Amino acid sequence: MNVKARLLALVFCLFLVILIPGLVQAQGGLAILGSSAEADFPSKLNFSLSAQSNVNITDIRLCYTVDRMSFAQVTSEVYIEFTPSTTVDVSWSLEMVKIGGLPPGSSVEYWWRVEDAGGNKVETAPVQVRFDDTRYSWRSLTEEKVTIYWYKGDDSFAREIMSAAQQALGRLAEDSGASLEKPVKLYIYADANDLRGAMVYPQEWTGGVAFTRYGIMAIGIAPGDIEWGKGAIAHELTHLVIHQMTLNPYNSPPIWLDEGLATYEEGLLDPGLASYLSKAINEDKLISVRSLSSEFSAIPEQAYLSYAESYSLVEFLISSYGRSKMLELLNAFRQGSGYDDALERVYGFDMGGLDSLWRGYVTKQYRSAAAEWMHPALVAAGY
Image (cartoon, rainbow, N blue to C red; front, top):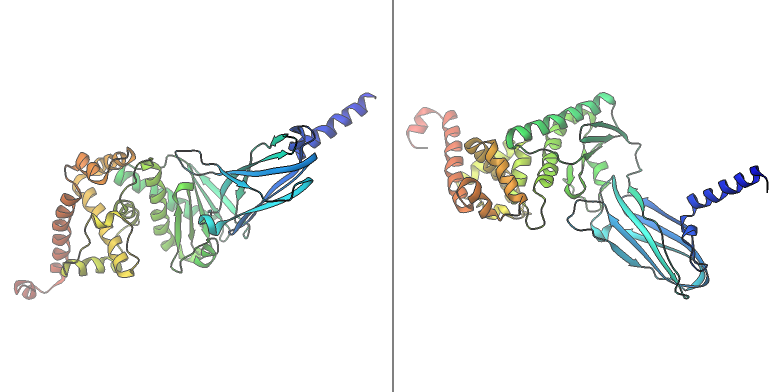
């Protein structure tokens, strides 16, 4: 064989190694002929495998891990059902309805384990596949730890979105000392309908969502509705930051703190939410801090009040005790402290103490505000 022929043979062998990595791992005639994964966003992730051997292939398993923040490496193993044969073609789908779905831009690493009747075994090298929303032609913009993906609107729209994100991070750092520790992705859908089309279990009111374990958020923002979008960005971005800063294997912050900070970073409390808070004060129907530590009610009026109270609680802690104490509180939760223990350590009172102090603060605040616009004669009469 001449030098040119040898070089061609070497190139052909390398080509096989790249296209069919399983052949390199062949054992006793058992080889992987092909393997692939294809996203059918948002409903499925489809896997397929082709293998052959000199004897019947008897066992095929698909192993995969989802890339997300965690304290333990979780590997899922799927036993593939098939008829034993010397040549097999199998497929399996990860149904998103069974796991709650994956956000756009998430990724899954997978590999196969195959065994034949002769005891020969082959394990493929891990391959990473992205679960992308291919319905749209995404463009991207990155600044520091934030990457924005969008498909509708010009470059100036994306730059305004990025500016809003960076300003939100700046306000959050100023208010609480909290900041991003890892990069995050922000997917901007053209409207709420497009956003809901990216979700497995969408709610009709969903306008934005933070996938905290993945460092991904998705928001429906039309180019003409960017002012609303700035508040939504601040809210969802705060959730990502708080999750990164407090992640631990033992406990998570109370809901009122997480939602309170997110709502607080949007800016002034929405007048509609403020009206629910004012009404609850007047009727002596405020929800306790302890109750606000768990999931909010599904009843709309109670949920609105929960968000309003959470905003007020965070406002009280920041205005009364400052930024440094809020950062201490977040760090206490990062260490896995319980709700009462964390508050005692940082502020010197537990949830009951916080409830009492805050009620005095918010009642005085709202009644003073009401007195400012009431006629002096009505105030003097005790109305």
